[in-house]
Length: 363
Image (tube, rainbow, N blue to C red):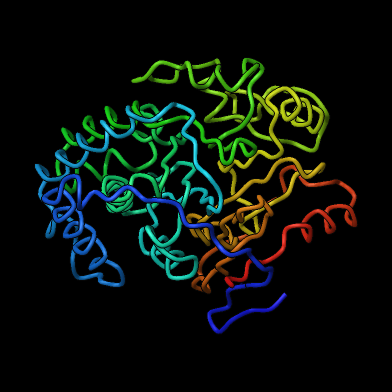
């Protein structure tokens, strides 16, 4: 495993991509395409530019117009949105707009790369609106090249507490926070890649008896305190046992290896990719190799020394990863390594599982 000049690891080979016909917004609605291109250009100008705020480049009225457009696109998609490999799967971003762009510098950008995002775009960091606007504009412009799923922080009860409400209030006023909540209630809850890889933010649910169970969730929807919606956003894997357990979060469940294996058999899938938990290397393979946790921003909240990663699936659904190592934190930061969550309790087995996912090399 080698490292390039940016301390980013690279390694395993990907098969050549099979070109598929892309939707071209420029032919369908050239004015909208021109507008989105301009929005993306303006948003990209904020990268490495601490002297300019999103309030200087986008009005509240424009943001609301973008929200209304992307809401319609989300509602046109299934609640289990489907995509074909090759594709890159991205975990939590948490309003770290600058780190998101550094990650794009490493893994490529839409539309050249197809991507699926697993939620938690807001809270904790300072630039949740910037993250959302960039992803929403990319979705409007290239709707078949980027897939956006909902995370547990895309709910009003959570993002009113952990930063996004205050960010909206400071930048545009509280009213725009309500517009975002309306949009969040329309974002798909899960994704299916090439019929064989199930993706969501949180994890499995006792109520997930078929993929149609997800497809049939009505939207707009607001997750309550229990049930399938909550579990898709909140549940966690564990290596502390085989079955279902009460979650230490106080909401939803924790689930073990046997639950994952049974779900793969019942749902006729090969792999589950989820996010929701910070992991030290940016990715972690659960014992049994049927579930991967991915986390895609480094130095989470300046409390951890974690790397960021994305999971890459080639046309044959072979798994690899791209990793962005964390920059140094200031000496005053009291950061620590992120704990393991669901890897094998046997050290040698855990090492073998980790090495099963090879670093990605672009052909």
